[in-house]
Length: 172
Ligand SMILES: Cc1cc2nc3c(=O)[nH]c(=O)nc-3n(C[C@H](O)[C@H](O)[C@H](O)COP(=O)(O)O)c2cc1C
Image (cartoon, rainbow, N blue to C red; front, side, top):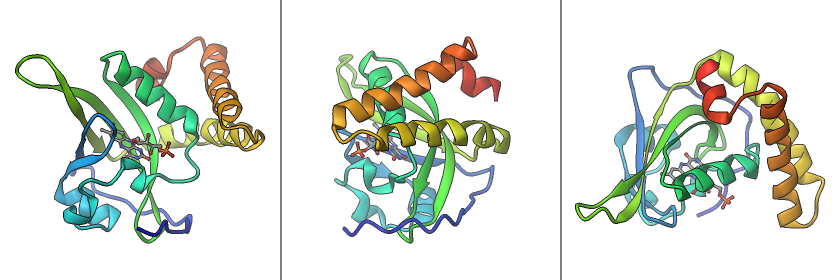
């Protein structure tokens, strides 16, 4: 599927709706609800089997996804603010709650994400942090160095505020 170019035009979804998706262990989509499909601009059939990065916006620093995957890898849930991109290249901000999913025997079988419309104050506070992390990442040619630099930028920001990402997102 072609990756759209970002338009920097924001689209919104109502507070009453929840954007839901499930993935397998590699982050490939196994379920998307109607709200997801409508906002992102894809049919569910087009989404199934696709990597979740299909809605990745290039303004999102890789550091945030490292935080997400590291947290899930520890068996913990994470709340995160994410800027996503629609099929048309527009974007929509979400406040995501991502959790590991287990089967009856306790085996990890995938992940689940519920996303609500975010508080605007939170976006205003986080956008500059994400932008700075992205600039740090862009300043490095080497992928690992880029990720480390972006991640450090987020860590430094949290340390300066004597907080964690978890605590921060709920304080905004
Ligand atoms: C349950 C679940 C939901 C996810 N939702 C999103 C999402 O809405 N937007 C996004 O960009 N990445 C999401 N991701 C992270 C992607 O899997 C991926 O790590 C990210 O898009 C960065 O992709 P890239 O490293 O290929 O650029 C989600 C991952 C999981 C496990």
